[in-house]
Image (cartoon, rainbow, N blue to C red; front, side, top):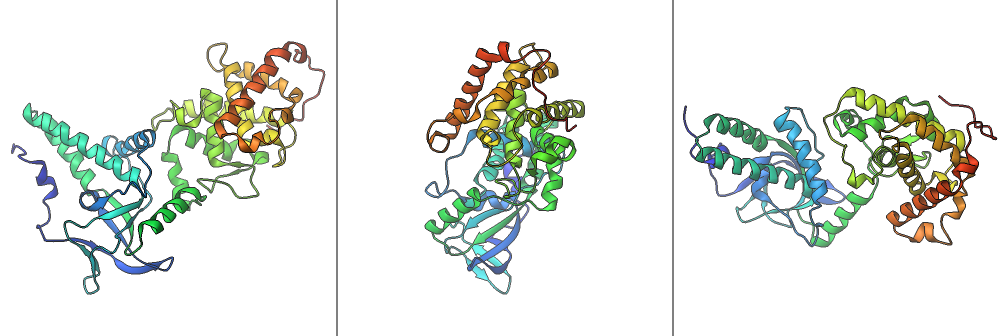
Length: 384
């Protein structure tokens, strides 16, 4: 077999030229000239730049999750999807109307407005594969070289949708970046379907919202990635946070079991237990309403973390231990958790932990007096 002499051969499929060409039709977006195009990663690697005055620093946890996702495509050959990446040309390049393409000189770059972590994930994987290729070549491991070469070819050829603003400045880029990352995002039907390819707790949240009778009363906005419409009590993101708190006793950022590979039996067991939990909340808490403090997101996450601690005391997560501790809920004074304006002024994590400690201390002090096998109060009708 022919030995591979250089990694650059993988990028040399086109004839060299004095410029980089980005084909696309000139249009207008928010009153600014833009070009929409689909480009292979091999081209994007050479033309993008990150301005740290516009972009935030890379968050290692987010980068790691994206690398895992890309590896679904490289290792498991699953199709993956990424939203389009937004760039700013800052006046660089020349748009050729006849060829319908933006032409950049080799020294000119496109600056990332949105998509820094996605690009960094591809870049990191490319560098890792290149290092593996160099080692395999030194050791003359030809079979391994072929395997790595195939992965690199697929990585370089991976298509990414892009939108490039031709002539906005850094201040406008910062505003655009802020708007994109703070405003709620409505999901199209294609993305809703793609949720089945998402991480464990994301799929569990979708299953739970669709199948658990209790969730019909709690109402979850499954059509927004961030935020929720006024008519919903829970956001999709909050439901995921509650599930992680309930089954891991952790904040979402520290989740350990939120991977892409899992058994369906494990998923269905979690959905069943979560249904029991939310049914218990409906039995023992006031009617769900936006004005009820116990249904606020901070207390819901704190409550789930506390329930995890009690339900796992027997060792493994125990349904009967969970059902037992739920009986304390009617006796908790939820309005005494925060003093004054604490519920609005304290940092989010502090509010969650303050609520968690309040519930935990109340339970430790009062459960022996308030919970018995034959409760003196009647719970609401079971909605399951």
